[in-house]
Structures are given as C-alpha cells and as structure tokens.
Picture 1 (tube, rainbow, N blue to C red):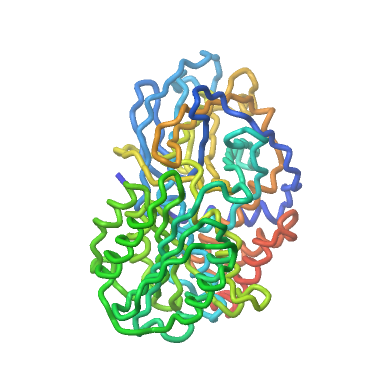
Picture 2: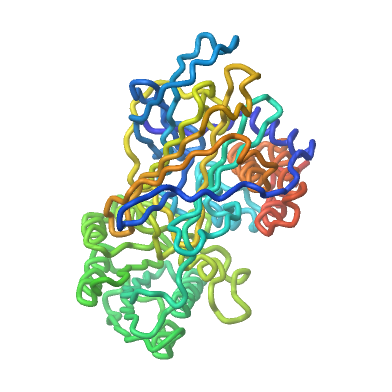
Length: 523
C-alpha cells in the first residue's frame, strides 16, 4: 500500500502551542555520529519521512507519515530481544524492539516550494494538491554541518521531549559538499524548449537558467545545445571555462521557433548525449521547458534506458506557475533518475544583473550531483517505545514496497521525523537500552555499499534543537497551505517568526509568504 499524507488539525494546534510556549532554545547540541562501515566502498546514508514498522518476526506495518501519495517503504527484517523490564504500564507490550525502515520517494523533486512562492507572490492561493510537505522540507532544510574530512556522511540524531509525554526523534543525514573545482568532467546536453508557447517570460527564464549552468562549467566540459524546434541546428561547445563566450552567445540567440514533437527532440538530444558520452565523467541531459506537453504524450522509455546507461535527466521548469503541469517533468525526472526544479519569478531571482537564476545557482550541485542512491534507514528504539508517524498516529497494517528513488544529493541533508510513544512514563529517557540506526544505500553508480550502523542512548542526543523547531515550522507551513485555513496560517506564522527561527533566512521568507496568502489577508 502506498503512503498517504494527511493533515490533522491537532498537529497545527500543538505546534502553535509549542511556539507560544517558547520551549525551543535554539541550542544545537546534538552530536554527530560516524557510522561503522567496512569495505572499500565506503559508507553513506540519507533520510526520508516514509516509514514501515515491524516487530519480532519482521511483519510489515503501513507506510505512513508525511509522505507524498506515491511514496512507499520497505518491510523490515530486523528484530532484537528486549530487556524484559517489569514495568506496570508495559505489561501487555512484547519485549521485542520494533524496527522502522524509512525512505522517501523522489526527494530530488524541488518544485513545490517555488510554485507555492510564485502563486503567493502573485496574490493567489497555491493549489493544495501541488503542496508536497516532503518537498518543502527538502527545500527549506534544517542546517547540518558537512561530514568531517574523510567521512562519507554526517549522521545527527536528536531527541525532544514533547509536552504530551512523547518524544520527537529527528535524524539528519548530511552528504559532503561538492569538491571545488569539480573532480569529474561534465558532458551536458542542454535541451531547450523553443516551441511558440515559450515566448516572453518563459524564454527569459530558460536563458537565465542556461547562463547559470554555463557559469558552473569548467575547462574540458562539453555542452551540446539542442532546441525542440526542428529548424534550429544543434551546436556543441568545448568549454574553456565558466561562462564560455561562444556558449553564452548561442544562449542569447535562442528564440521561439517552430513547433516540433517532444519525442523527436528527445531522440535528437539523446543521440548527441551518446555521441559525447564521457566514461568516468558526469553525463547529464537538462531539459528547460514551460511543461506545456502532457506527460502522457511522451515516450519515457528512452529516458529510463539512458538513465540506466549513466545519462541522468534534469528537469527545469520555466513556465508560468498558473497552470504549470508539473507531471511532465515529474515523470521525466523519475524515469531519468534526476531532479525537477521549478524556477519562479525571473525578475526577483536575477543575480545582481548578471542574468543568472539565483535558485539554480544556489542549488547547482544539489540538482546535478548525487551522493547516495536508494537509501533506506532503519531505526530500532528500545522495546518500550511505540514508533508513530510524524503526526503521532500509529501505523496500520498494510503491505509495503521498497522505494528505490530515495537519493541523497551532494552538499544536502535529508531529515527523518518520527514520534516515540512510551508504554509507561517511567521509561522516558531511560538510558539502560540503546537506540540503533542502520543505513543501507547504493553508490551514485548504483553499486550496493556497506551499510552504516550506529547506536546511541537517549541522554546523548536530548537537546532543545533549532533544527527540530525548523522542521516543525516547515511542516506547519505545508499543512496550512494545503488546508487554506486562516487559523492554520496564523499558527504556521507563529512558529516561523518565534525564536530561534526569527533570524533564519528560510523562515523569514516563509513568514512573508504566509502573510501574502489570500486567506490570511482576509482576517
């Protein structure tokens, strides 16, 4: 069964109460734990918000939590004996540790936050069906330090004691920053939609994005510029450095032309990508489009076939937010094992008059590079904790499947959030038993890596964390956008503007956007 994300009113009420209570000190004292890993392949992990619980015999629980509709998670096979404590409130609880395996579907889809921002800046309410809390948390991610030199990943578990008597367990997993200069040669095919619908602002955004990509190129990179209009000839450039002159001139010369089929343009683009493929390099196809073509009209077989051979597809949406068909680039980036980023409001995003798009500039490595693929993280708390989804709801019974799209990008962190419900108040923060975490993943090339394991006790990671507070605020923002309820918007604003988040750039942006929502403005 696939996970469904839901928004109980109690969540926002509880978050608003927490914000008013001011119980977040902003102290980020959680330790960074290195996982135990062997073998020459190194180790790595990532995170997500989809969970499956299992116990004793490894029976699967329902996928749940703050997951998009197409998220799913794997059954757990991990089980350990409990300590056999004689605890009054836990008499009916089997002394077996419950395992929860977490993944997230398509964490490289980064279109929900910019689409919501574009709608709000235009004075419109975002489409609730386009609000994806996983994407929002991936876009407005809490800050985690990169791993220590030589370490594959930083794993940061944090616990917060909530007023209800439950614990919030949040684990951030951070990939290393991208090396500077980039170590691998980039062979890029830049496919630009030049259909008549791209005239005006969409073409301006496409050119800005293409120039931003050009600014990140290095000597020995190769770029082939392909237009969807059949009368526009392909051009290949041997890059001499950032913002290579001939490439910039070709980008400036782009203009809407004739209407050709996307399947023909993709075939031509992949022909060029195959011709310029670099072994041991980074091979990418970036598609800039207003997404006017329905996803059902595109043959995705060449996209998935080339992804399997090492050419990932990056979708960059440049069309107007009103009516933007995210399904096209969702489908293409999923088949192409790549990312989908929507680029909103070119004028507001222009970087110091350079013509570069600031969103793409700030997230270039995150969009184009991957640190680990198909990541699954299994959490095993002491047996006297029931693991619940981020809204505090028990998991139900359902089959679950492995989610192979849970990819961690370079220089980025992903976040797991679960609620731990003790069977008796006396066991809260008991340090007699360990929490265990196991991370399974693949290298960027799809090779299975040695799992990462770690253990810790509750007292080691109990903190008043600004990171947990930020995840609370982002989750509340997503819930408020989906419900469009004025009370929910006020609660989300309260969290975003309360210390220690009042100086966080992401929270300042979210606070301003909430006040632009038509439902908030009518209060």
